[in-house]
Amino acid sequence: MGINVTLTEMMPQIVPRSLDPDIAKIIETYLEKEGINIALGHPITELKGENGKVTSAVFCDGTEVECDMVILATGVRAELGLAKSIGCECGRWAIRVNDRMATSVPDVFAVGDCVESYDAILRSPTISQLGTTAIRQAKTCAQTICGKRSRFNPVLNSMVSKVGNLEFGAVGLTTTFAQQNRIRTVTEKVEALTRARYYPNAKPMNVKVICDIDGTIIGCQIIAEERVAERIDTMTLAITEELTCFDLSNMEFAYAPPVSMVTDPLVIAVEEVSKKFN
Ligand SMILES: Cc1cc2nc3c(=O)[nH]c(=O)nc-3n(C[C@H](O)[C@H](O)[C@H](O)COP(=O)(O)OP(=O)(O)OC[C@H]3O[C@@H](n4cnc5c(N)ncnc54)[C@H](O)[C@@H]3O)c2cc1C
Image 1 (spheres, helix red, strand yellow):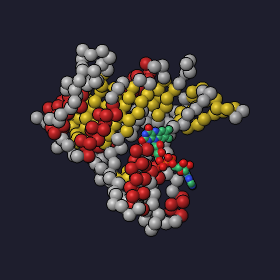
Image 2 (image 1 turned 90 degrees about the vertical axis):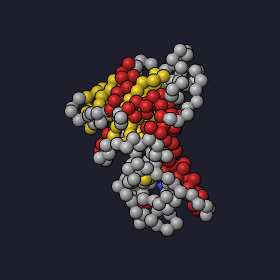
Image 3 (image 1 turned 180 degrees about the vertical axis):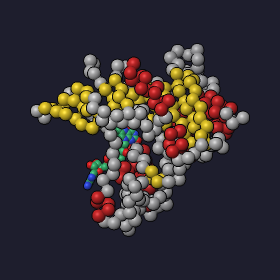
Image 4 (image 1 turned 90 degrees about the horizontal axis):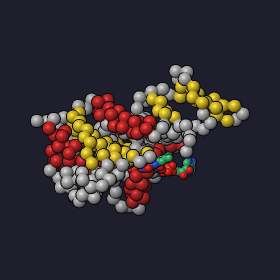
């Protein structure tokens, strides 16, 4: 399209909440090949303009990039003023709710981006600003109000996205988050294929599996041109059920050459990480 694009991120990698640096690097390399400039590790501190129109973005180190359009996608934080004004208890980031989506104020419920969720692995409050989380919370809220039994479960923040031809997804903890929370990890990254090796259009699939020191799977990150979401969902189930890499190595996966490999990329990844426990 002839547009000169610079993607900036103040952290030293893109998608820092969901991906480890080595997996993010695959996307960064892809984007650079597509002609996108990537500027990491320096926050933008100023936008300059003339006559009501933006002219440049200035980084904290003084570097200036000329531009005629800026897209800010810097995340969201809940606006807690209304909730606090009626006495709702709030946590560090959001409104505190129980597993039926009730706030601390009787007959006041809250769901979605403005509430705290509970992290299934860390067993501590977190935020899960995803549409999938909001919908499940809304169902629990509606069922509770209608007098039905329903509970909102702790979250794993399972996500998937697509940039250009590349799908990427993640679930559970990254190695970085695990280390920040003093969880010792054993990890492995493999490159497999999305279809049988001899079948046309088989695409590379990168899978990273993160286990705790007992072999329990606590995170997974996947990049490929196709079929990422279904594997993230499989890993979400595996982590929810507290499966180990040894358990998943022995699970059945469906196979036909046009749609999968005889040994699924997930199995290859968990087999490889399992070897590190021997
Ligand atoms: C660009 C983008 C892409 C996304 N893509 C995905 C994705 O692919 N997958 C995924 O799982 N999630 C995705 N999300 C996240 C997802 O959209 C949100 O987590 C989800 O919409 C949160 O639901 P919510 O009901 O809390 O808030 P919203 O959907 O934002 O709804 C809140 C509503 O409240 C209204 N409102 C605000 N203040 C007041 C007030 N004082 N009185 C009355 N009404 C008010 C707003 O106008 C809005 O309509 C994406 C988000 C963005 C921004």
